[in-house]
Amino acid sequence: MSPEGSENAAVVEAGPPILAPGHTYATITDKIASIVLVQKTKRGWWFGFTVSFALLMVLNLAIVYLLMVGVGIWGINIPIAWGFAIVNFVWWIGIGHAGTLISAFLLLMRQPWRQSINRFAEAMTLFAVASAGMFPMLHMGRPWLFYWLLPYPDTMGTWPQFRSPLVWDVFAVSTYATISLLFWFVGLLPDLATLRDRARRRVAQVIYGFFALGWRGSARHWHRYEMAYLLLAGLATPLVISVHTVVSFDFTIAVVPGWHSTIFPPYFVAGAIYSGFAMVLTLAILLRQFYGLEDFVTLQHLDNMAKILLATGLIVAYGYMMETFMAFYSGVPYDRYMIMNRMTGPYAPVYWTLITCNIAIPLTTLWFAKIRRNVAALFVISLIVQVGMWLERFVIVVTSLHRDFLPSSWGMYRPTNWDWATFAGSLGLFLTLFYLFIRFLPMISIFEMRGLVHEVNAKKG
Image 1: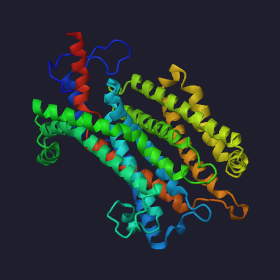
Image 2 (image 1 turned 135 degrees about the horizontal axis):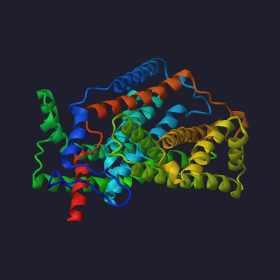
Image 3 (image 1 turned 30 degrees about the horizontal axis):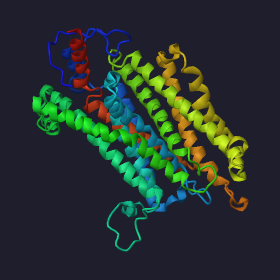
Image 4 (image 1 turned 180 degrees about the horizontal axis):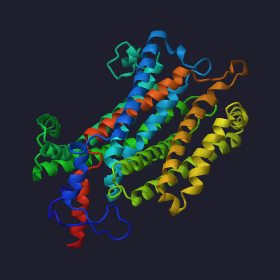
């Protein structure tokens, strides 16, 4: 994985290129490192960061008011005790899945096209998990008692309740966040050393040097690095399946119509990858456009991600069809009514909008190579999929709760301005962290991109 050799070797790939020809070790290092160390901060970055930080302040205001008044400021009620908080939690956790899949699974499969997108995809995972993690604690009503969900010794047998899937979430999400953070940080070590050696200011040299952990690029360092990186990749890959499977247990072990379904675990995992790759596509297109990275994030990368989007979209469509089929095939009147209520009830416009966003638009367009290689079209489709997947979580949570077994307990859920403010604030948290990341750390892995040159030279030799 350590690129060694002549700096004048250029990349010439047969077939669709995953790195534009003409790059050498030096040009790759210069272009990526200069974004952090040399280039002036662009006005577009300042504008985006200002907007994101303003949304983050809205989140702080919403949280402070929530702690002062209580969860009554949200639209949740009886019987809809779950609302935006759980919808946003599941949505953000799903978005984080693509980063782990790109980083770990494609690394184990030796897919070289991951190397241009894995760094910012891993960062996206961390920031999405950070945005997701706050919602269950805020939804508790008394977030200062969050430690009741932690696996501390419980001699009295009162807390935590280990038979609750909400406690399982703590195990799954915390493990996922820890492994993802370690995997991201270990992958950064060689690049942090590069920034340390190229930084002109003493403060930057000290900070990058501190986090580089004494990296010198010796054979021993590379050997230990590769062992640790592959080990963490092996640990992270099962998490792609396990984390959202556990999240689906929040619903599927309940007896509520529309939740009690065995298809939820694989259906949730596919949906998570679907929404996650849509977010990666969105970020990749924006970064390659505003930072001139078309020679690193090529049309071949966008085409590959669009194909994965198409594949996971087909699985999601299959999940929708099986959910509807089993509701009628089972003969359970409550499940049958739940499906008909989704299609024709008060939330029918939301349901048909999600079908349009998740199925009709992407699955009728992404079959065509011209669409998969059209940057503007892919950008619009990726945004549509993200909206559709959020609406899917809304439909799953709300439509099953607002009309369950007893008509006497039926009700309607209407999100309040504080619901929307908290959701918008979570977007601000995610984007603020992402803007800081692309400003102070290399958004593309320097040494792995140089590794592409090394691999091509080895094949040619």
